Amino acid sequence: MADITAAELKQRLQAGETPIIIDVRETWENEEASIPGNQNIPLGTLPDKLADLDDYKDSEVIVHCKGGGRSSQAKMFLTQQGFSNVRNLEGGMQAYQKA
Image (cartoon, rainbow, N blue to C red; front, side, top):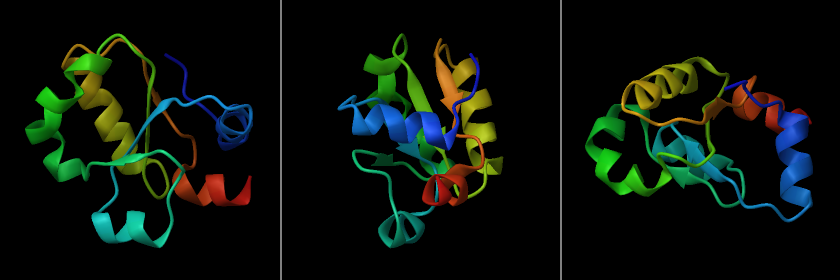
């Protein structure tokens, strides 16, 4: 699945959509700045939280971090676990805050 731009995500949120957004940054990073409606699951804990995400395997899941590196790893991991529609937020939180 193609990744998503910050502008596209902001537009969808402003239109009232509520996509599944997973912030894979550390908790303190999420507390400093976050996207409305996101779930904070730090990358290192993602394998332990898979059961909690099982209902989303066939849904669009948007992952993000600060700049895109950790969320790229999360996208690859979730895809390997059978998630069919994982999208990485291009440029991460840095891009989102500028969009």
